Image (cartoon, rainbow, N blue to C red):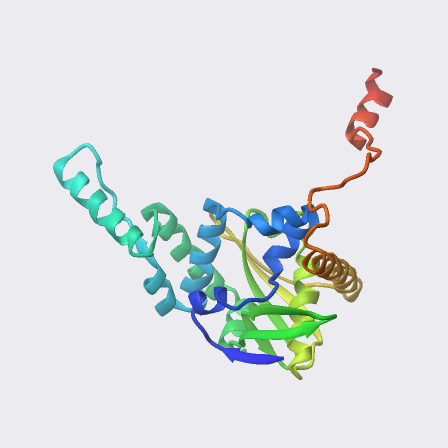
Length: 265
């Protein structure tokens, strides 16, 4: 167990421990976990938004906002060369229009009475590690207040049905349980988990969703199962690490059956 406080992203990445984003790779196969995940444009945007809202100094240390320019002109080529130099130095390049969106999202977030209070009144908890069932795990918490943990998300749809889909797609239930249990292992009471969502398109709706206890328990069972998979493969490096070494049964998707029932084959 260890409380690491507000450390840099580089310092956090250098800690050898299992993190939430790797659980999704493990779910596919241990080979996916070993290869690591690619950093998508959506992930870069999400990280930039997160840092700009919660750690603005860190944002400017890690990102550079590209001005609008015409790459065909002499001046544009000069700007492009400067941006490439910054990228080689380790900074990520953020499009000017993406930065304008992030600023508008932040403004909308702090116009929301509950969300504003959450990030004004809560503590920024920083990073933690913990041993869970024999595996070293780590997480970075956005904020907590009296045992309630808060996680900031950029999303396409912050509505009830929209964010429920995101919970299923990205297994936010698993994240909530994983983060909460790591914090609890460090002596912090874990009472609940709230997602603060900000939509990425105008009018940048904001919603605060408290995940129900049954969903957190569902996430807990999922991550514990994946930890066992992680331990098995790390202790048995010669074991088959692909999706499966067996012939498995599969069926057509439910919508195809429904379409057949309604319209015929």
